[in-house]
Length: 305
Image (cartoon, rainbow, N blue to C red; front, side, top):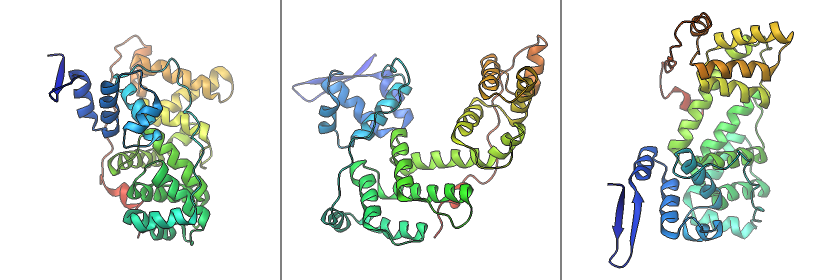
């Protein structure tokens, strides 16, 4: 059986079994909605038509499209282009905000929660940003609260105790979450857990690269995050650093990254695997063990009442 056929008496809709299985396993509701819409209207449907047909925002549709590409249901673009700029933000008047506060309990509760996290009374401009995240992007209030808590934690780590992010910084991170398809607590929890684990490990990678203990800049963070995702422990990065300095006489991020990419393609991730592989032995592929400990401890750092 290659697909499912849904009938309503007049029309029928055929769904790919493989695509349905991938969507069920992914648990991505927005991606499933988009796939159904594409099956219903055809892939020639315009983004505007999809936006009218689906009960989710344009940003969520774009994120769902990327999920379908990652799952192999839709073809990937020819090159990884940056996300399209967001549409012009709507201007929320005082009456608009008052209406959101009256009609949406979640948004109403979000305001004092955000004020508590930021340690200040929100101004009209601040409320307009939260309204945009909630109303235009379509991010639920509980997810926005996790977003705010995350930005507060990031600011504390970067600038020290007592420092708080601005609402513009929170908005920028919110758009990033939207592009990643983070629209529910499950997706937010997975992202925050991964972020916390990376932050805890970052000091060891900085030492491996002979860098001072400071907040990483964005370019450094991208490289180190990529190496973590590949499965390299700090010890292997330190070995790649030594090779880089030997051949280039100084630290060179691109050269070091090239070394690690070649080792990754060969299946060498630990120092032992590199040594064995270079000696002509086997190239075992061993996945790093999952971190042990309290699986919920990371979340308690974000929810502070």
